[in-house]
Structure formats: C-alpha cells, structure tokens
Image (tube, rainbow, N blue to C red):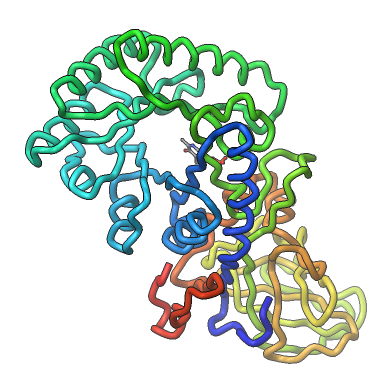
Amino acid sequence: MDASNPPLSRAELVVDAEAIRGNVALLAAQARRSGAATMAVVKADGYGHGASTAARAALAGGATWLGVRSQAEALALRADGIIADILCWLHEADEDFTEAVRHGVTISVAAQATLQAVVRAARQLGTTADIHLKIDTGLSRNGATRDDWPALVAAAAEAESAGQVSVDAVWSHLACADEPGHPSIDAQAERFDAAYRVACDAGLHPMRHLANSAATLTRPDLHFDLVRPGIACYGLNPVPGHTEVRLRPAMTLRSRVALVKRVPAGEGVSYGLTWTAPRDTTLALVPVGYADGMPRLLSGRMSVWLAGARRPIAGRICMDQFVVDCGDDPVRPGDPVVLFGAGDHGEPTATEWADAIGTIDYEIVTGLYRPRARRHVVDLPGESGPPEAAHNGGDRA
Ligand SMILES: *Cc1c(COP(=O)(O)O)cnc(C)c1O
C-alpha cells in the first residue's frame, strides 16, 4: 500500500475505495450487457470495508442501488447523506418501519405481518411505501414459501390499489450460485419465474432480481432487471476458477513490527511451545492477535509479508500478538508487516487465509474487529477529507 500512509495503530485495515469503484464498474458493465442495473450489497458494514465508503465507491462505479440487511443499516447510509435507492431485507419481529418509509428506503416483504407493518407506517405518514416482495425459491431462509406466496401477492396488490405500497420488484436469492451448473440454480430460476407470473396475474408490474456476485459473473440469463453483487464489489471472487472479470481485493490488513529478538536453536515459541527454532534465528513480534479478529487457526499455517519476503508465523497466534520467524534477515522494530492484501507484492490474500482454515473470505473480511483494527480509507480521487485516523479512530466509514 501507499508508503506515505504508515500504519497508525497496531492493526490497520486499509480500504482501497478505488478498487471497489473499479470492481463495481466491471460488474455493472456485465449487468448492462443484459440490460440490468446494479445493486451493490453493503451489508455488514460494507463487508467490513465501511458501509458508506463502499456505497460511495459503488455508486461512483455505476451501481444505482444499494442493498443492506436491515432498516438500521439503511438509515445509517441516509444519515451519511446517501440518497440512492436502498433495499433492506431482514427485519425484526414487530419492526416499526416508519423511519425507513420516511427516508424513502425500500423494504423487502416476505410475510403478511411485514406487509401490515409497512402499510401502517405508510398510512401514518400519508405516503406510499416502496416494497420488493421476496419469494423463497429453495434457499429456505428468508422469503415467502410457495404456499404463502399467492395470498401475500394478493394482499400486496390490494395495498398497492389503496395507494399504501408500490410493489416495485419480486426477488429471491440463490443457494448454490457459486457452484456453476448446480441443478438447484435452474430449479430456483423456474420457481422464481412461476412466482413472478403469480404477481403479474395479480395485476402487479414488478421488476425482478435474483443474481448475487456468483450469478452476476456466471449467469447473464439470470440478471433480469437488477443484479445484487456483494463480495465481488470488494474484489473477492466467489467462483473458484472464474477469471474473466479481473477483480481487485480492496482490503489490506497491516501492522508494524513491535519487537525483534535473536534466539538460539532449540528455543520454543509462544503458548504450548508448538514451534521450536530449528537454528539460531531472528524473531519479529507483530502486535495483532485473535482479539483483533485474526483467526487463531492460522497458527502454523500462514505467513506474512515482512521486509521483502513471506515469512512464516512461528507458533500460536495469541490474543494480542504473534511471532514471525525471520531467519538471519535484518528486520527492525517499526518495519511494516502486511498480513493480507491484494497480493500484488507477494503478500497473502484474504482468500488464502480462508482457504488455510477451511472457511470463506467473506468471513475473513467481515470478521476483523473494529475499533481494535482501525480502518483507514484511501479515498476516491477527488473525495478529499481527513482520514478517519485523524479524528481518533472514529468510524469515518
Ligand atoms: C449477501 C447477499 C447478496 C450478496 O451476496 P454475494 O455472494 O456477496 O454476492 C445478495 N443478495 C442477498 C439477499 C444477500 O443476503
């Protein structure tokens, strides 16, 4: 990363907003080829990159919609001055939607109770609420069942006639889009089509959206009116082997060496003494640990980029620190350490971390704990403003 921005805290997340903008531009170009618009998913604080940072970069890259989990996440974007269309889809029991409706946030409706709550909010405000009806086509998570669908559609159509809601879309979510050719994808697409026809027969004229990142990349026939990429916006590829669209990871995790010491051959390192120096060697202490969200399972399975080379983590990762074996190479306190990044210089990537411990990179980038791991945004050109670190670690994103 930019050498003029040395890490200011022990664990620093550097977010490359330009990479997000570029990734979204590539995804939006794919979508446009099928006549679809792009909703960038910025839930979970923009997959750990900062929701507003990610949202602004995505909008600059050509997204026209933003997708978030909850009303609260949507309202936080509005509070940050973001006026683009926003869809929120996961609600609490008895949620009050007044603020979402007041701020023009589109609400996903998958149940009669939600529809009623949205209608209440719209009537109270004397306005029409925008909704997207969600059908469960096989993920069995969020979404109305096929049994409940006709009655939900009928009730929504009635509320639309009464001017309480506008049913702007019918949508669903795929279970196995990251396994191209999986038979469930076409099966879900068929159910989706049937649900759409029920809505049309009820007199609705909704858009359709179904595709996450993986389907955006691999199934142009399922782009419909809008695609909903999340992970790919951040430069991580959910489809192993798919290299057509050149995505760029936007997050770097870095730190600096806190202490350097020389130990003789045979000396054990870290809790449990699971690693023993095979020769006289230099150890570097890095002040990042599992309390920062670094998976302890990476102990003995990962290396870091330090002083121009990849160097193995020696022994167990602790709560606040870990040790790196540097052999006889000269390293000094203060030397930058890249734990993961875009991979340009040979540093590990978030995907490598995930592969090493049998998880997905989604979990790596969303799992770093702030404010311990402080975030520093490298802004889009022209978007100036003090880095968040300048105002004491406040979450600028
Ligand atoms: C998270 C999410 C997405 C984005 O998924 P990716 O695999 O990150 O592209 C799209 N739609 C819904 C409903 C989601 O929950």
